[in-house]
View 1 (cartoon, rainbow over the protein chains, first blue to last red):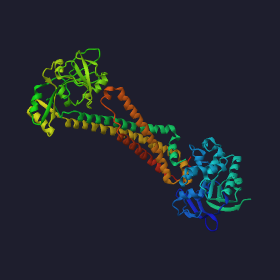
View 2: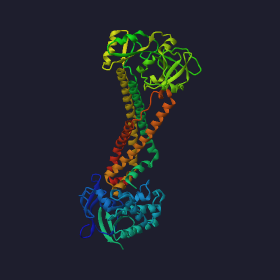
View 3: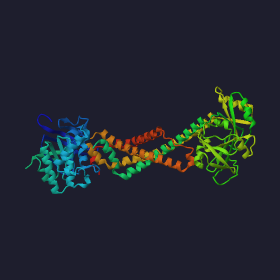
Length: 228
Length: 388
């Protein structure tokens, strides 16, 4: 993080695919302060997910600058280490590993840390308690409901004490009631764990839960509004 | 959970597919171990065969089979050959074969020689020459030269005929008492019966005849030189064969068997390895999105490579265990159910057989998993996460 408290600084970021035919990001600018909760909204194909992938170092930009948690992602070679330490992902489809138990799924990101097996288990248990799943730690994901699986995914995202949580339509495959539970959980944990939360959504009621809404269109930031 | 436990657990997501891959490799391992046990046993048998015989040279009539039965040489040659330079001792032996049961009497004098499930090899030899054929000690007592109804039998023969010291055995329509048993380590000799030379000559109408003459050379003599001297002394009449020459022929044969067994093993392994590669590639395909998630949560490419490679090695090491157990049990079972073969071959349990199989299994795991592991590690996280 830099001295002015910004945890994400993106300037004129460009990314295209298919030999330049698809301009996913076309001069994106964005600044996010540490501890903020922002939502990124826009129509399909506007570049929301591409922006998230850039912040999470899942992809690399063609032009522009991007600094996340004080790291220049265009100059860093070891992006997997950056992801391990600074980023927690929550996907629309929970993406849990089906043959591992709930607690084992939460432990997965910790393999790249120096934590012992006991430390991993303790941290995973702590997080599963915070998402109210301590009684299901040995169950396989197939035995859980959609909401429970997403809670496991949230616990997994937090396990390495990341500075940023990137949530890509986390309630997209849930019913509204369960989705609301998940959103409230995310918001709670965002405050409790003091992480910056960046959420992509196309649902206004979800977007309005954030402190600021970043509207994206054609690979650019159109405007940023504060939540009502 | 440790990384190792994850690697061990993952291959069994699809139990059927993993089981089939294991079976494929296990067959190859089984072939390597079984052939290794049998050829190793044959080599040991051969080595002990060569060590057991005290005579370095065997003389036979030119043109005849070294294991042929019937008398073809004049017994007087046994004494004559003693005068050749380098010869320390000689023994004339007469070979014959006969079937024997406890109750039936068979008079046929088989001209085939040798032995088999039906035929028992009988050798006539003087008592004081038993050492030249490798019999240094007898469990019980040896026959006396003048006896006409005493025999000693080899360990293998005793087992297959179910005879022991004091039993009676019927040969050529006559009952003989088993006065002792012997074991030389030579699987041919141990499958036979020994009786006084004169007794067998009388029984088979081969008076003053012998089949072979065994020659023991003096300590400093060159076996090949003495062998040549004998042939030179009796040109076109006598042919000699030395233990070294026999060993060389047997080793050539074993070498061929060894090469053939390696070729068969490699083919089996190749086929199994293709199965492993297919299994791992399918596994990587099915887990593309999962691999994307692992990259997203910070797993390094080399950890992903290590995981896939490790899973491949887990499969092949399990196949090593399965294949080895099946091979050992199978070989033991076959040799137990077939005493005539089991009497000749004692399977070898030398550690290098199992080490070779282990190394092959490990290498197949590495080679079979390398490409799928590399592909998995090189997957783009975003593309992998989008994979349906």
